[in-house]
Image (cartoon, rainbow, N blue to C red):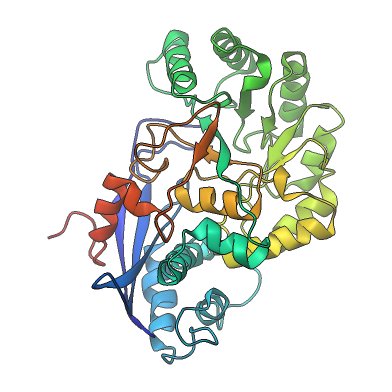
Length: 394
């Protein structure tokens, strides 16, 4: 087999929402189509991938470096030993060739887009849903038939009051989620506490609510928020400080005994390992949120999981950032603790298969070979239009 073509396009996912650090008024996503010469049901197998929300489309990196490298590789280079399927590790090695360590920037996002498309194609060619393929390769065939998901939202909206926030969160609960997450850190502490209390009025218990500061605080403000949040006994307190500030995270633990979550803005094995070494995270309660779509893809994520095992962490403590079907498959196939979800935002990329409801914060997966993008109609329509032209051009 061989790769026939690789094409990338940009799709906007802009909205009025904001968190403690950024708004999403200009947010974009790269969508990539990797065309193979393998034919299934009379059509060439095409692997699709996209960049996860929160980082802008890495088009220049893809078009100037990573896609040309893959196209320039010999036809046998990225193929597995059988010669009948792609080898994700070999593809990863090809596109990472001639890249120095350090100064990584967001090239991890670009590689993650390609990696997603490769795994999609590998599972499609094998005739298996990705979660089953991963379970067969790495878990002795054992997979989870449903995955815990929580609803991330509670953003700062212009001109929306507490009742509007309550309505959004109640809507998530009505959809079948039993855990919801809201943003903090984009307003004074007193106002954020009022927002938290407003949401708790529509929740059945305080452990239904997690809060996310998106790395906004210095140590002084992180500690102030921690002390203020302790009495609420929330599900978790997420990313209080800069994602690379392990000392802040470690000192935070002295003031917040409840669960904390972090890692969603660390994109490679070395940073994840430093977090585990130095941030004094607690394997019995804290949540790790590394997301493969942003972190050089599943090839690198598997290495991160191996490192975590060496340090005594269960994969059940991992709940990836991103809220999409790729992470959902990984969670089911590798036994992770769940997956994020973004009901109603970052569409059509957020969310899961059409017609499969969330029940008690669990969702089942599609049995379609690949990642299951075909089961999400609007998303698959966008993917099929990934022709390498800027979005909006004929």
